[in-house]
Image (tube, rainbow, N blue to C red; front, side):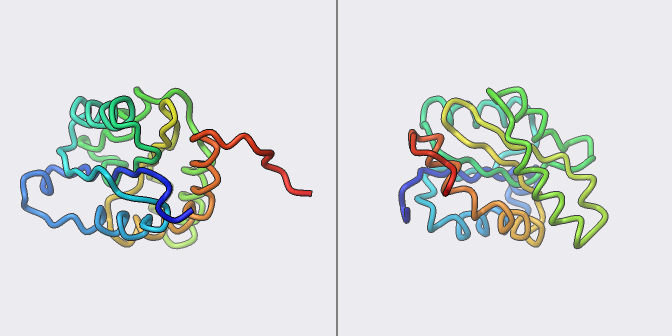
Length: 165
């Protein structure tokens, strides 16, 4: 499955978009998904719902990426609008991914219950919101990484049965 899927990494950060902060979380995501495929799109944009939606729409509808991982904008601050922007574009949610990330994070910090990250599908693209901190983004992606090849295979047309005897 190495190199099969087309991936986008989108960092939501006002400071990062202005060049005032290095994007460590986006870099970590790109490194961690290298075995899944090629990161074909990478961007750092401000925490602005319209900009987020336009970028996600372009990456799903025009570029037809298989997977988009976002980092940042999932907390409680007024500028944290990633989940709302993502939800407005999804055809349907995949709540188990976000639930698994929160569950694992809760084992490390009670602050995990404040995460509003969502995951879902637009067209044939899986979109997953991850936290903004490098430590949290690594821990969260580690939890869902084992199921991503199967999820992406199904979204891209694998019609084989999911169950094992």
